[in-house]
Image 1 (cartoon, chains in turn orange, yellow):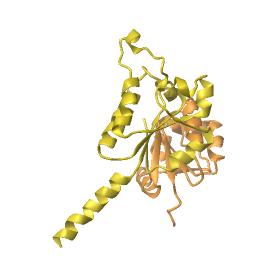
Image 2 (tube, helix red, strand yellow):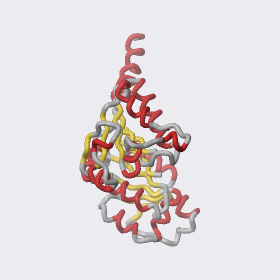
Image 3 (cartoon, helix red, strand yellow):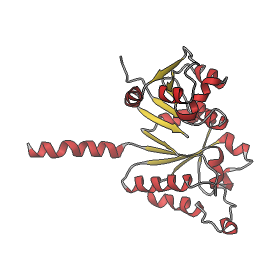
Length: 102
Length: 135
């Protein structure tokens, strides 16, 4: 797997009701970026905001421990890649930089 | 051998220092300590010769409004701290055109001389930096 083209990993941790935060993140997103949902951001799995993230064409990841902790394990979506804590660390290493939105 | 042993890490350190840093301000004045902490990071990094640029988006733009009077709130204003940044070689400040019009502000009403960029250029600006801090 070539990793040189992976640019920014956007890590968002607030619930989808923080619309401005999501708008800011989206306007900071370019191709070859990725979005990772952590903490309350996993509630995005429950609402239409998710489509907006997926439609960026970038991979959307969700931290599996947060998905399960928030009781959302039944909301499986083939467009969202669920990752473990270890994979979270790997992702951070694969991307050139991380950018947190909280 | 000893020379090699010493120079190798030094190169790494210097490379680290050459990395540039963008700090994003998103919060209005008087609301939280985020802006002050971001400013502290900017000064600390600049002291270590790391090139620092600042980006003000959304409510962060209001931090630069030059008509603030923090004394009325018995608070310290960050405006003077921002004005002093040039002395620390921090001279690249970016604001968004859309935010200026959203808050009916002009460049003249900002306490720093900022570069005004279009919203769609923000992502490219962020990409151009090695590290981005977004408190």
